[in-house]
Length: 154
Image 1 (cartoon, rainbow, N blue to C red):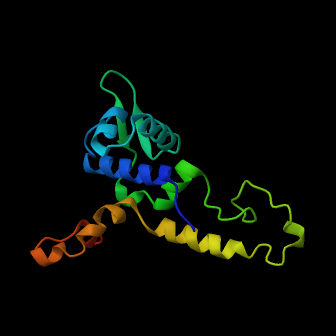
Image 2 (tube, rainbow, N blue to C red):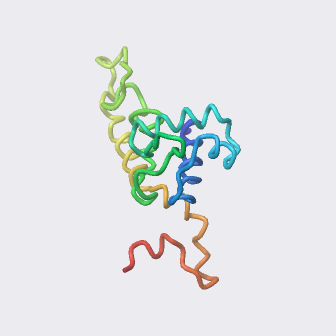
């Protein structure tokens, strides 16, 4: 089974919460309380997100974290890479830091690169905003457009 890690899931939840409060700085304990996630895990996720420049850390008494850019400019691929490293399905893809022991004998050596690339492209094509607003697909029926419908319009 191909499955994203709990860390990635938590990262998306935390970034989603931050997107709802874009104009405010927020702390790891505040995010833990708002999301129901364990405080140590939130702190760990925030450090990784800050190292990858998805969030900005503000020091001081009134410090906290803010998004480095809008949710429409944060891809799922960027979140995955910030929290787990490069997208690498097997040890034999270029992005992998593992080494395959049977690479020289493998009849499909390099074949996984096509699959890995397709998954990477799919993750790159979906933004945090797409995840946030995917539940609004039918809101237009109520007379209100979803943010994803208005994003491309001037």
